[in-house]
Length: 48
Image (cartoon, rainbow, N blue to C red):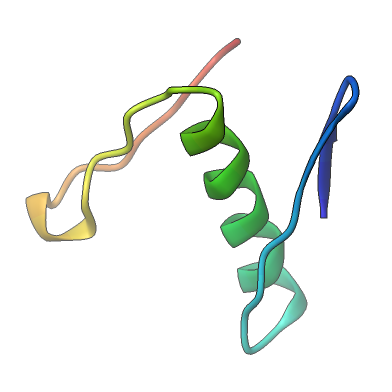
């Protein structure tokens, strides 16, 4: 689960680390931040 102000996003994964990452990605997507796909071979670093 990730909270930003009044917004909350949840994520699911096979372990806690993956669930946290999924929640963060869901929040970024909801906020309109474009994520690069893993197939493109690039990592994404976002600073808000």
